[in-house]
Length: 317
Image (cartoon, rainbow, N blue to C red; front, side):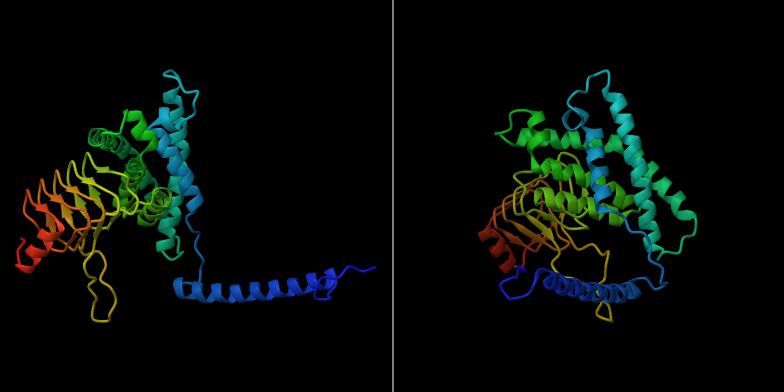
């Protein structure tokens, strides 16, 4: 007896129909790819693309290099840690150089000039030289988290457990890549951190020492934001743009400063939204759920009521 499905078709017939349907979808997707690729790659050559999976492995290696006792193998000892750091760093840099080469080739629209490999090596060498600075800055961030959170019991707990530190660790790596000329890889690193922590920091944002994001989920920091020393942000804070300039053709103008400047020793509480190229003066406090679109002088204490009153009075600097 031949088996049949509920609709009366035999298994072989159903398989043939599904295979034909799959072939149709494959054809449709191929046509869409060709149209998209023709639009993106004017020369018609499909360049190699960087790999998000490879970057995730590189980031994991770099985090382990920066804090090997926390994120390296559990069997590391004082005698073996340097060898682990050396081996892991060499592997990460080799892989990173290849990803940088692919990014440079992508922006050259696939027309390899022979300079991409040289430039990739130059960028990765400069990135290597920046790692001690990154570690030094991160140590100040970890101390700021410990000093700023009464629930913290140890610096090791901060390193292992705090999403703000995880996000800032990856941001400081991404910012170096962004500054050195690998912005796409920097964005990939930033989005890896975003997906892991819920904290969205553009790699172009400039963040000084002793930075602490408490709790963290929902924090957004835009590309041209500048943050001073000893700044603390709570969950749900946005440092964003107020408006987007367009050129005569209607296209958005990119690269203009459009995000806030937050000076030293500022605290921004949960849910506050700060928009535009404004300055939050040193030592200021911005209360929860405040919507702020004008500058405030040093030492300001901005609450919802005061923010509205200052705006209505045309105040600010």
